Length: 248
Ligand code: CDP
Image (tube, rainbow, N blue to C red; front, side, top):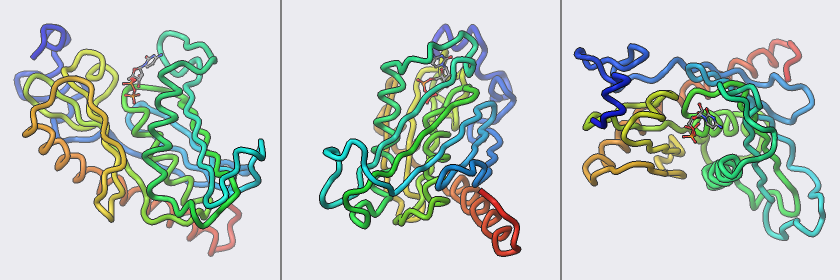
């Protein structure tokens, strides 16, 4: 374990983490669908202390028109962290990090969408991080995929994501802000849960081949759970629609 990780005691003598979790334990996850009335689809996600909202607009006319693609929809994603979402105020200007996360979120979602069903249109996904505590890109992917389904966009599968971290030699699931800052590795993984296909795999830190294999196994187990929460949230919303209650 790095000296930094030891100094903040990321793992105690019982093998518990800074927030009391065991290595293979996720933070509590809550998903609410259809909160935004003006969006075609939306989802609000709480993952531990992370609070993220995703709004989907489209498929709709592409502006500017020259960006339209003749054979498929143009998928645009914008991830942004609100200035008060982190301890030290963040400028509202898009940072390099936000531009990078917007790109990886788009690439994580695109394989799941039947983009070819919507030629010459745009599907816009806006993601706002209201509060951040490590793992906002994975919470954003969960929110965005759920919002796409809420918008009725044709999809092969949902997409769910979780980050596997490393504290010394121990792999831990769903790292929080402190673990991200002082830990020894961070591997965000997104998958289409039913198809079992990985759509995002990033790694910060050093992972041995054996650790990558175990990280993928760990992630895929938790991604199946996240998928069940996404499905439940979507079903609950549409059960209300069937009962005649107006939602989203
Ligand atoms: O959020 P995620 O883990 O996907 O991305 P990261 O770049 O690894 O950022 C880790 C965490 O650092 C974020 O979730 C925030 O809690 C924190 N952060 C911050 O405090 N201030 C920033 N300007 C950016 C990130």
